Amino acid sequence: MSVYVITGVSKGIGFEFVKQISEDGKNLVVGLVRDNAATEKKVAAELGDRSNVHILHADLTSYASLNKAAADTANIVGERGVDYLVANGAFPSLFDAYDPIGALKGDKVEELEDVSSKLFRTNVVGNIHLFNLFLPLVMKGKVKKVIAISSGHADLDFINDLEIETSALYAASKAAMNVIVAKFNAQYKKDGVLFMSLSPGAVEVGHFANVTPEQMQGLMGSMGKFSAYAPGFKGPTPVDEAIPIIRSTWEKASIDGGYGGAFVSHFGNKQWL
Ligand SMILES: NC(=O)c1ccc[n+]([C@@H]2O[C@H](COP(=O)([O-])OP(=O)(O)OC[C@H]3O[C@@H](n4cnc5c(N)ncnc54)[C@H](OP(=O)(O)O)[C@@H]3O)[C@@H](O)[C@H]2O)c1
Image 1 (spheres, protein in one colour):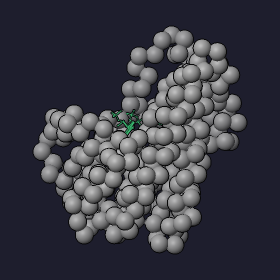
Image 2 (tube, rainbow, N blue to C red):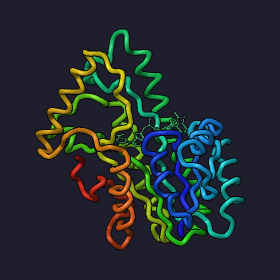
Image 3 (cartoon, rainbow, N blue to C red):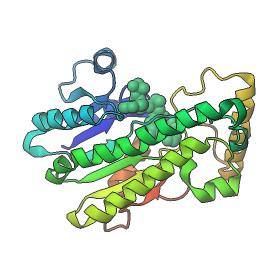
């Protein structure tokens, strides 16, 4: 029925997007990954032989690889173009996930600078290249939706009201990405292309499987705040349950409905958990 291009499908939310979307044999899914051989193997092992899934190499930090992936995608999708471009891949830095911003000094200075550059290069500049290179294909598609997977961490009210002092650099990269999405909306809304930023909520993908007791303390502090913010919050949502919620929000989002350039949660509003 629809053609999807999704970045970062090697694991986590991205792999689950591929799994669930390609269950409908009429959908065509092109997944972009850094290690295509490993992902092809994983797709074959876990999803079986799905001829509607294509895995291509692309690294968000390499313009040349994204350019090649766009050309290869054009050959695969032909005149159908791309209906949904989902910018899911990201550098999910854990460097600052447990510590407050005031602790990122002293012996952490060099790593702070390295991680900041990598975050901006991957999560911001990488997606500028992705959008520019795939836009001609999106213009050819019927649906014309570009969805950037963001994070509630980037919402100023969420940070200020809950006093979330961790994940500063990662949050800043997502906030910068949200601005880029709005800029693309500013230019391409008139062409009927919906650009929006969508936070998936807290989703269980195994990021915190090997935390130290000290890191766990930092995490529990955030979890306590999350529970106070959303009393129904019982921890991250299993990834298979998160996907239909996210998809239903991008389905109902439209330019006419006011979603052009918007930054919303998986619920389609500013309720982040
Ligand atoms: N899980 C959550 O609770 C949560 C909450 C808020 C937002 N998010 C967002 O959801 C999206 C998916 O994250 P996830 O939770 O599923 O994490 P994940 O399992 O760590 O997946 C991240 C994906 O991004 C890919 N990636 C990283 N660097 C890349 C690069 N330079 N070029 C291309 N791909 C790259 C990874 O590929 P490799 O295998 O090659 O590393 C992987 O496929 C991200 O945008 C994340 O910020 C997640």
